[in-house]
Length: 74
Image (cartoon, rainbow, N blue to C red; front, top):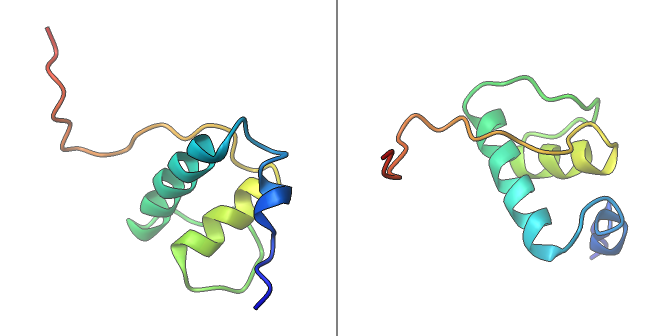
């Protein structure tokens, strides 16, 4: 099975594997919570949509939109 875009192509857009995973997860969560996708790809999966947004240079850094922040604010 061929995955498109390929991970090697996505790694040209970000610094490393870790950044790619974090960026994809955060953006996919935002899409799953109702934000509109910024890609024209016909897909239902928030993860696939997020990956295509990264590949299309529509997502560079995703701010955390979680309301349940567990970090100490001192």
